[in-house]
Length: 123
Image 1 (cartoon, rainbow, N blue to C red):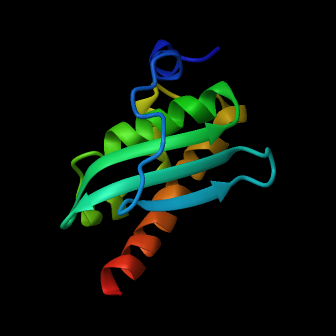
Image 2: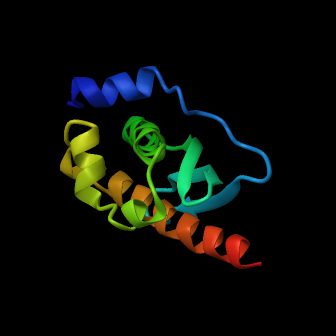
């Protein structure tokens, strides 16, 4: 069974959607299960001002994506570099063993976003 916190994120996603330019956008996929996460973030200097997600996947994937976007908002690049699987697991109130891959997908998305943002910033 999923935790009540996870189900709350799934049922009430407030960060669902996509931000347009100049937001940074990345797409990540888990080839084993097929979950897909599009993450967009608008940076104001070093800080994530706003984050949005679009996810195709299971209940846990959608909930974890919402938790990720919520967590990111107001964080600096340096803070986001510290993102771990356990941050997402704790945010959603735990993950069942079969759903732990969604936390990995979120970490992959953060890493991809930081790489993409660095390219945009350095251009």
